[in-house]
Length: 440
Image 1 (cartoon, rainbow, N blue to C red):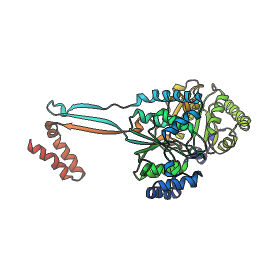
Image 2: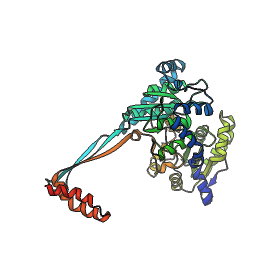
Image 3: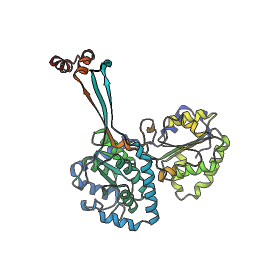
Image 4: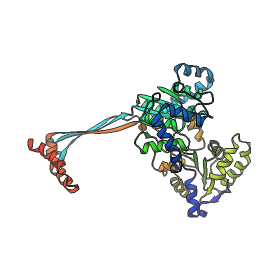
C-alpha cells in the first residue's frame, strides 16, 4: 500500500485509476467463454461433464450431477453442530430482514376528467419468477453463507423452483456446508457443477439440469462474463455485475484506527484483486492506519492475497472536508461503504451510490457477511450507480393492467387520436379506438 496522499493531489488520470479498480472486464474474456456456452447449448450434459473435468479436475458423469436427499442428510453429520446452529440463526436473520420487501398487488380507481360515468381502473401485479438458479462459489473454498443469501429472497418472493449449482471438490461433490445451508434455506435441487458450464446449463437446460429464468450469485470473472453474455442474448435474467470484493471507509478523527485497519484486512483476504480504500479528514488517522497495516500484514494467514490487493488497489486518501470524502464515495460507488464519523447518519443522508452501508464503530462488513441480515450479494466495480443488491424484488416480475369503461374510452378518444397522429400517423391505433366509439 502506498503512503497516504491528499485527494487534491491526484491528477485526473490517477483519480480515474482509483475509480476503475479491478472491475471485471467482460469483453476481454468473451472469446474464452462463448465456445463453452455454445457447446453446452449443443451437447448438454456431455459438455458440462467435459468442462468440469477440464477446469475443475473432477471426472463426473451426468448421474453424478444431482445431489441426492440421502447425500444432503449425510452432510448434516459431517459438519459441526455449532455450524448448523449458526447457519439456522443466519437464515432467520436474513429472512427477517427480507420479509418486509415482499411487494403487494395494488390498484387505483380513477374517473377521466373527473366525470363519474368515465370510470377506469389501473393496477399492478407482482409475480414471482418460476425457476431461479443460485450460483454458489465452491471447489477450493466453501461459501455456505452465499447459499442462504441467494435462496432466502427467492423463497420470500415465492419462486416455485430454486436450483443451486456449486463446483465440486476433488471428492466429486459440493461442500457439505453448502449442502446444509442450501437445505436450511429451502433449495429444491442441488447440482455438482460450477463455472461457465453451470451458467450455460442453467440458461439452456440439459437432460439433467433444469432451465431457469434467472441466475444470481457471485463468481469469478468467467462466471460473471457468462451471466452477462447469456443475459445479452435474452436467455436469462441476472442480479447485478459482481466482481472483486471492495470496501471504502469514510472516517474522521473520531474513528478507531485499529477497527479500520482490521476491516481493510478482512476485505482484502478474499483474493489478489480486492480493493480497499480509506478516505479521511484526519492526517493522523491516515498515518496510524497505514503503519498498523504495514505491521500486521505479515502476520495474516492469507498475507499473499492481502499484500497483492493492498499493493495494487489499496489507497489511503486525505481530504480537507467531509463533503469531499462523500463526493469521492459517490463517484466510487462501493460495494461496501463504512462510515466511521461523529455523526454517521448525517453522512448517510448524502450517500447516493453504494451497495450496502455500515454505520459507526460496531458495524463491520463481516457482520453483514454472515449474520446481521442484510444481503451480501452486492454490485461491485462501480455498478452500484446503476444496480441494487440482491433482494426479494430481484425475483419478482411486475405486470400492469387496466380496465376502462365505455364512457372513459369515449372521452379519451380524441386525445388518443391526437397523440397517435403525431407519432406516425398510426391510423390503425386510432381506428381500434374509433370503432368502439362508433358502436357506442
